[in-house]
Length: 237
Image (tube, rainbow, N blue to C red; front, side, top):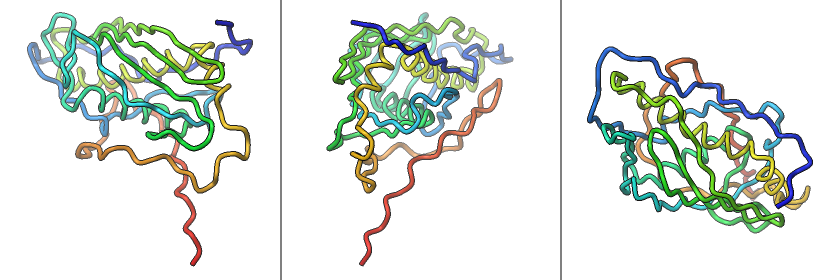
């Protein structure tokens, strides 16, 4: 596969994965995750992805080290999850991509747009491995492993573990979108100017879980997310 002639666009994870040591231990605990709480901590300073379109297929879980609902710390002392991992990851990716200025579709749109497929085969607090396929005139396929070098210590608090888990989504998206070959494939599949009908809006995803207040990062507040596209204009009588 040829490499893009474009320079690599730097994406910045604004919230660190490392967490401070807390006062209370939470060994053997369950950390409940909710995509409604996740506040993306990434941004594309170059604006490479702003205004683009993406059809995001529901991820597939083939990770033998997870269950349907949970992934685990490498030492199996903590489990992370609650909703089905495929649903949690889809909503998390959608929010992160939206924060980058990408319009995400749950159903294949009627116009040209890249189609992103993920099949993850491993997920712990140390790493995430997934087969990535981007359907595009310039096809992209790769096995991507994302390392999380500073997982919570045995003394980390529940809130610190939760914040760490949400920053994992940031890191997955940042590594994927920073790949120059992925970027070239993605941009090659964008609809030509003027071919996206103005009334088209992202298809609604399945109803999310009950909303709760956003969780702040333990080190810094997440930047404001890019607002979603405006609603379609009403049809005149």
